[in-house]
Image (cartoon, rainbow, N blue to C red):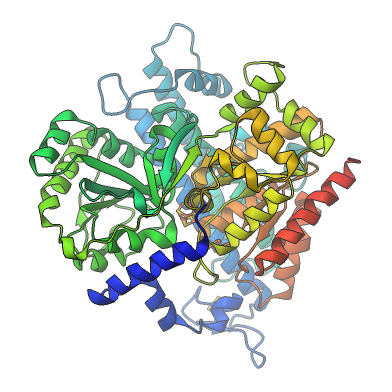
Length: 625
Ligand code: BF8
Ligand code: SF4
């Protein structure tokens, strides 16, 4: 196992390097930004019109238009949900366009025909006797219509339990077209519209559902169809995956359409030979952030780290190229790269960054472009300044690649109770009922300098394992587990006796890596599958979500669709609504009356994990187990 202290030692060494080359890092910028603006922190600053900005203070309890703290904090919060929903969903839209343009001879092909045909059937797209690409294009059309259709609700909500569907309908939060929910949120928060906090929260739940049971779910499904549904593989994680004698290319961001091409290009023999001709042992592709999760799950590509480690990768001085697509990319990477030989390449019109080399990635030319990039990185190998290189000798083995299909497959292997093509979650339900497993927690989300990076994740994970609680993880949280060595089957020795027995029986690590943040949609289907096979609703099962170090607007959207799905969410960072008592009440209690779930917020990780365990035990007690 690697401890947080050991990781921090490495960061400190890299930070010294940064000082030597006069580079600025996030730690420096945090100092300059501290203390943070209190109005912003509390969510009570409004600049939705140019009469403002208006701030709520003890002296001024309303903005110029009369909006109070509840209206302002509620509007800001809804805008975060809308922005987060747009990010995940627009990512999915890009992937749908790739599917629409896929062909047998093109850059992108269909890798999971079974999943495509299943989705076609769900969509009512005819499949009999048709060419697979004709089916794919019609499926893509239907998927794209989910963004802008004039009438109706998201097709995937039919996948939820009957009880969830009833709740969403009765509460008036069934998600309509994705773009419509985002536009409605922007309209409602526009000057002179909704000032009622509960109405803003309700629209937040609805918008988030268009993400979790719309955009994100589409992103996951279509990525599986084009790039293959992930399977269990072994890989490694942390900065030690960078190599001294190889051309190091880091892929960072979220959209697998880009990284998949770079990974494929790096395997071309001619390029590998070219790298050797330049004195390198070969080409080493590694991932960062959610891209790392995507390519690790599908190819076993090694993972360099998570969100607050992106600068560290460049600080090793050993990265020939960092290529990025969209989301969670520090603009700071551009000036930082200039302190080294690293080429920083941006590829998407959605994420343009001054100081980067911009090569707009196009579906038709993707593979050739990826080859050019890999060649550029190889040519850059000779520019590496060995006096600036420090690759921390720190990495861990990890087993990754547990989408629902793999989880259920492993369970079926044990129970030998195959009920249909999807299998059954009965073995896990039996283990929970028997108390061998107390429940499950989905640990997700980012790093945030507001708390000691990775520490909260690590502390919470260890305590849950000790208490026989299975963990599923995605995003940067999954990378903490990777770096720490918790995705290793040997991590079972940290578990209570029950969980350890389950790990042995099913041959799994105690933390299951389910993918990137869009793959939290997989977690919704996992919870739904368990609830269905149990014969109850998602809100009743002893399964909760936890985002100990979240920072992104995407995380706010996710937290809301998880709550909408009836699953409690434990947060280690306070949402920026503290300036409104109504909003605080709504996010922790009010949503319970609407969806049956809400937030539990505690910035102390030890208290947060105790609350999680209590929450799981309370769910068990309510079920009479
Ligand atoms: O979507 S966990 S820092 S990388 S937002 Fe970003 Fe947060 Fe990481 Fe992926 Ni998710
Ligand atoms: Fe101020 Fe109202 Fe304009 Fe907001 S919308 S900036 S509170 S006047």
